[in-house]
Length: 630
Image (tube, rainbow, N blue to C red; front, side):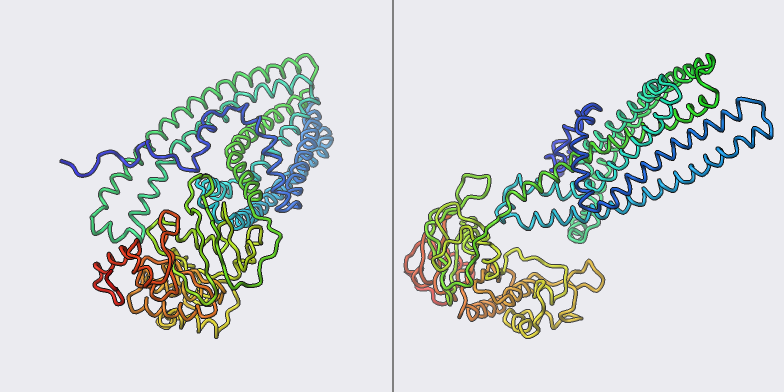
C-alpha cells in the first residue's frame, strides 16, 4: 500500500491563476484580431509615455523619422551612384561623377545609424520613467482604496493582476509602441523609394512580404499559447524550488527527508515542459519552412517583374539595383512590424488591465469633504450592520456598543463572531451598511477618513514585520522623538528586546539583509505594541496583543494598556478571558450580534456564553482567581 499519491503535482486540474485570465483570448487570437486592438492600445500607451516624459517620447519618434528621411535620401543617392557607374563603361570620369553621390550615401548611412542609436537611447530612458510612474499610480490607487475592498476577492485579484503583470507590461507596451512606429517609418521610407521607381513595385513588395509576416505572426502566437499553457506548471516549479531551497521550509525538508520526493516532482514537471517545448519547436520549424518557401516564390515574382521593367526600358539598371535594396529593407521592416505588433498584443492585454484597475480604483476611492472631529469623548454604534463588498451576508447585525475615553472595553467571542470587524467599524476603517457610528454624536459617514485615523492606533493581530530599523518600526515614518520612543518601548516591554540588539534602535530587523536581526514572535509583538503607544492616539485597538507572549509579559502589557486607558479609549479583542478582568466591561459577540455585555463578574454571574467559555479555559489552565461558581 502506498501512502503517497502517484498523481504528479503538475496535474492540469490546477485552479487557474489570476495572471492566466487572458489564456482564452491569446489562444483564440488571430492576426486580424491583433490589428483591431491596435488603435486603442496605442492611444493608452502614448498617454502613459507622454505623462512619463514627453521629451523622450517625442525625441524617440522624431529621431526615427529623421532616420527614415536619411534612408530615403540614401537610397535616392544610391540610385544616382549605381546609374552613373552602370550606365556607361567604367572610366576615371565616371568614377569622379559618382564620387559626390557616393560620399553622400556614406554620410547618410553614418547619420542614420547615429540617429537610430540616439532613438534607442531615448527609448531606454523612457522605460524606467514609465515603470516609476506606473508604480506610483498603482501605489496611490492601492492605498486609497477602502480597506473593505481588500476583502472582495475579485477586486483583490484584479489589483494583483495589475500589479504583478501590468506593472511589468506597461514599459514593454511603450517600448513596443515605439518599435512599431520605427518599423512603420522604415517601411514607409523604403516603400516611397519603390513607388518612385515604378508604381507596380510597391504592391509587389507588400505581397512578397506577406509570407514572412504570416510566419512570424503564426510562430509568435504559438509561442504565447505555450507560455500560457505552461504558466501553472512553471508556478509549481517555482514553488517546489522555494520549498527545496527556502529558509521557511528548510527544517521540515530535512526532518521528513523530502528532498527525493520534491526533486522527483520537479523532474516530472520539467519533463512535461520539455515535451511541449520540443513539440513547439517542430511546429515552428514547419511554419518557418512554409514561410521561407512562400517568400522564395514571391521574391521570384518581384525580381521577375524588375527584370521585365529593366528589359523593356521602363526602369534603369541603377534604379533596379536600388529597388532590390529597398525590397530587402521593406521585408526587414515588415518582419519587425509583425513581431512588435504581436508583442504589443500580449502586453496590451495586461496593459489594459492596468488602465482598467486604475480607473476602478479612482472611482472607488473616497472623496469625503466633510472634516473629521478634532477629538472625541465617546464613540457609539447604534444598530449597525455590515456586509463585506460583493456579498449579501451580514457579518454584523444590529449591534449597539459604546466606548468612552478612560475606558478599556473588551470584545470577546468565538472566531468569526465579528470582533475585529466591529472594532474596524468603530474606528472608521470600514463603513457601516446600516445604522450609524458616531463620534461625540456626529455620524462619521462622509467624514474624511484620514481625519479619523490620526486619532487611532492599532496593535494588530497580524502585525507587519517592517524591514526597517527598530527605531523606524516604532516611529512608523514619523520624526523620532527620543523621549516618546523610550517611553513607548518601556511601556510595551520592547526596551529589553532592543537592549539586546547589537546596534540598539539602529538595528535592522530583517535577516534578509546584511547585519539584520530576527526577533521571536513575542518580541515582535512587543515592538508592535510600542508603535501603538508611540502614536499616542485617543483610540487604541488591541487585537490579540498578547497571543505570543509568556504569562509575565502578557500581564505586564495588559497593565500598561490599562494605564494607557486613563485618558484614552481602548478596545481589547481577546480570546483569553482572564484579560477581561483588566477591562471596565466586555461585549460578548456571537454570529455578529451582541449576546451579552457587562463587567467580568457580571458576565460570570449570567451563566451564559461568557461563563461557559471561561469555565473551559479554567479547566484547561487550572482554577483561575476570581472564579465564582454559579
